[in-house]
Image (tube, rainbow, N blue to C red; front, top):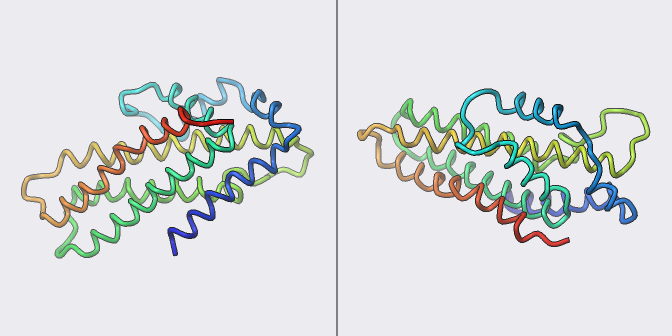
Amino acid sequence: MKVINLCLLVVAAASFLLTTANANAVGDFEDFEAYTDAEIEQMIADELGEGEFMGVDQLGLYKILLAGYKGVNGTLCLIDEVADIMLSCTGYVTDLATCTGNIPTDVKAVLKHITNAIDIGSEITHFKTELCASKTRGIVSGAEKAAKCAVKLSVKTLSMIRQVSDAIKLTGLFPTKTGNCYVSSTKSVVGDCKAFVPNLKSCVTHMTS
């Protein structure tokens, strides 16, 4: 049921952008500057906080994501990848519940980031009613709504990347005495998490108009 629901949300995502930026406004949407560079940098800083971000330029990664979210096919692909990671992370939570004994402190630290990623993914996949829901009564063009939505999705996706990246780092700190059940469950989700950013980039690389 979760798989079906997430698939429906992915389809709804592309439909929402198509109807928000109608056929006559698509070009305007792609060129529309929703926020200044300073505003975007502040949004990213507020969302991610301090600390190293995977050793890469977070603004550069943001621009890659934004290019994807400005296209319908790109949005469809990016949110599909978000949904896949949500399913993998949810499976990890379920797998841990089958392990015997108390969850080790090191595993709990990873679990915290994994559950954070699930929560952020939910915001992304439900963006029509959450991130991009209209909060003003004023008249706003479809191009402006879609452009602002693309920015918010890009920033929130960066936040999700941050959570899975931090989870990956922490798995390297597991003590050798960590139970096999916890280790094997964690290895599975880490593999999916490591593929997250490359898969997102691939969405943009292979995106067609």
